Image (cartoon, rainbow, N blue to C red; front, side, top):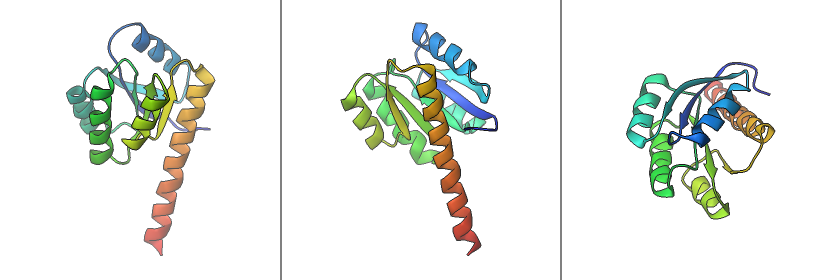
Length: 137
């Protein structure tokens, strides 16, 4: 369970899906939405400025938009965790190969999203603790 505030950047095309995700994310008290953008250049600029803990990439983006963005985010900001929302298992596999920390097939409920956020952030916390232990040795 996430216990501190988590900064999140939502990357999604304007419309019902983004509005729905925003409403869903607002039901999670630990989440602070630090921005909403709909393209790679805006996402990378905001990530550079805000250094969010988590980026949520929505399925409203095409795979051709999403995968290069994901690769750039993970390459330039490896500490930033990424959850990708996809339409099917092929996209899920492609997102994971591109570096997604989690890839959820659309149609999930609030509890599934919250669990995915918790899991991604817990694994990030555990890897940070492991790196600190190695540095202390």
